[in-house]
Amino acid sequence: MSMAKPKILYIGDLDLRLGGAQRITFDTLRCLSENFDFIMYSDKDPSGDFLRLLNELNIPYFIDYSLNENNITRVIRDYNINALLIQWEDIRWLTLVASLADKLGIRSIAMVHELPYIFIPMSRFINNFKALSLLKLLKEYLRGHLHGIRTLRMVLNLDKTVKKMTTLICVGDASKYYYQRYLGVNCISITPEVTIPKEILMQNDEHHNDNEFNYDVAFMSARHEAEKGIYDVVKITKVAKESLGRDLRVAIMGKFLHRKVERKFYSLLKKYQLRQDFEVLGFVPEGIKYSILRRSKVFLYPSRKDVFSISLAEALSMGTPAVVYDLPFTRIYNTSGVIRVKYRNIKDMAHEVVKIINLSEKYPDKYLVLRMQVMEYVKRTFTLERTCKELKEAIKYSLGE
Image (cartoon, rainbow, N blue to C red; front, side, top):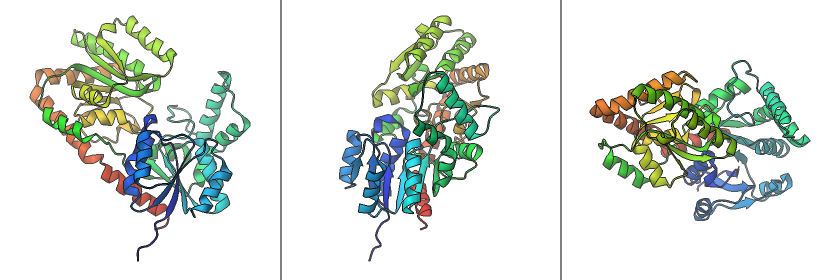
């Protein structure tokens, strides 16, 4: 006689277009459903792919735009829920689940990436979570962004709220580092997966010996912003171009969310006379995206706002060597194809970019060997099977199994 599977209310965002946390939920839901009975709960409508998956797996789901505690309580009681699982560190979800777990006496599990509210702190002088939260609140107040009393309370109590969770599951070692350093809490670290469509991998295998490249440099982020390094890409390219003594072809993929950032980006291109070197492509279809990554000599990613970068992982999965800052999220990669440079050292970043471009042109055989090593490393290390296994074990641990 088989034992009943634990019932878990999974609170999260079901729109695949909005980020990496949603992708992890989508990719692991099938394998996790073998051991747990999920009921999904969201304050947003699911995307088409997510809806099809839920229907295929016969997983009930509730859309509650207000995220009302009484509504969630009824679902918990009607389905005899054993535990609550949060998809990422949304401050409303954390506060809500901490309250429900206290009132109903059930377990609470938070799958976390960045720190709640303050995200990825870069201050050299402040290591206190509450102090950084207060500083951010002050900055937002001075910009005219006023929070309601309820939001203020949630933010000011975040450190206590996080510590109330039965279990924290950190997605990647960088996430674990930030939670230990700024909140003094331990978490179970899982290895994020990199899921590349099979047809893309087959094409990559077929062309891995090609030595034809359309771009010298590629950069990609879902949302272009200063913290993702969009300005540094321009500055690094300027120095690299001067060193090489020729024009460069630079592909920029992704979207500018704010006109202010876009204007400054183009202002820098004009200032450094680089407009002819850059192709700003916006969002591109998946097949074209991977083709551009595969046909680029180096992936330049001077971001500081990541705990695990899907953009970086996808570039590496195509065999493209990367130049990055030496930060917690880049230290997860143990391969010679990821070159780390001291944070904000523009000159050294450019130097490493030039070295890779020169390697590709002067020693193509060595360069292709490096690409193969990078590609095989990512395919071997960041697998869906590994992520599923580690996430399954972390949830079982939280449930006391």
